[in-house]
Amino acid sequence: MSKQKVVVGMSGGVDSSVSAWLLKEAGYDVVGLFMKNWEDDDDSEYCSTRQDWIDVVSVADLIGIDVEAVNFAAEYKDRVFAEFLREYSAGRTPNPDVLCNAEIKFKAFLDHAISLGAETIATGHYARVREADGRFELLKAQDHTKDQSYFLHRLSQAQLSKTRFPLGEMPKTQVRAIAEQIGLPNAKKKDSTGICFIGERPFREFLSRYLPTRPGPMKTPDGVVVGEHIGLAFYTFGQRKGIGLGGSKAGSGEPWFVAGKDMASNTLYVAQGHDHPWLLSSTLVTGNPSWVSGTAPEANARLAAKTRYRQADAACTFVGKDATGRFQLAFDAAQWAVTPGQSAVLYDGDICLGGGIIEQASATAGMAAAPAGALNAER
Image (cartoon, rainbow, N blue to C red; front, side, top):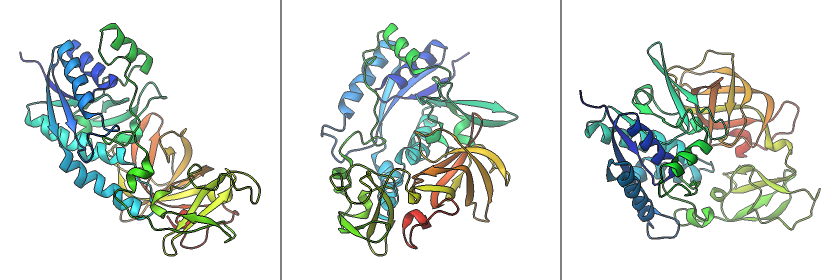
């Protein structure tokens, strides 16, 4: 009887390398697939494609599997990066990793793996899949500090049914220990934290290559001009560093935060104090919903949500959805810097249900709201 074939997405990092080894040890016919998805400045210090490929080949040789390189740069530019730039141009802050997973890692990669004769694919993500009553559930990883289900919430049932996450049941410390134990050449390689496939780089400098600067006024909630911004696309809601007001002691003397954008007047609003009312929201509306669970929750369901990756689950009510699928959430406690373009991802305990792209957020009842036109009021 022939072994079941599984194609593992290998990045050159320790997580995907250990995933491949675990599957090989479990008796699968494992093939490694290295995806090259960015070419614009591949010789720069921020793109380590060449070294990553060397690491993948070294690991594959050590654990005894075949490996192939495939180029998805055109698909990445069309499906992910173009949308990334459109969102920034509109004043929003997209999450490229969420889109990259749905469009590249679990679409282009999955299609290619099936063409190679694979029945399933695997990645080094920290998440779990469980089959229940003919449906597939996306679960948080056992190690909640490393859980990546937030980035996977836009997968479909079909994609989830063909995916394995070998690291879902173990802590990162154990993954590193296995890598050391079996002598992986990349056992001590640090984790990547940059933009999906593009790497770690000075972000504003990178974005300025693709989007024009368009300076405009920087105002306080009271309408006082305190500076000039370089272009609304280069700032994100809740941002503290890089505003250019660090030395300003005006007003309360507290730190300044980006608190809103008015695209029509090209105005950036900044406010002092981490808990300024403009930075707090108790409700939000999302568009472009995607339910990895297969169906949307019932109206008034009590759930938990994350509005950014590194955030504790926040208790909320799924208020309901309209005819287009756009849905509203009401939080028990006001949430800080709910950012348009980011994903609001819903959970029922450890089960990731899906989510949508944040469009609008509203200030807590009784608090001052941003002016009409400011993105943090009408997103």
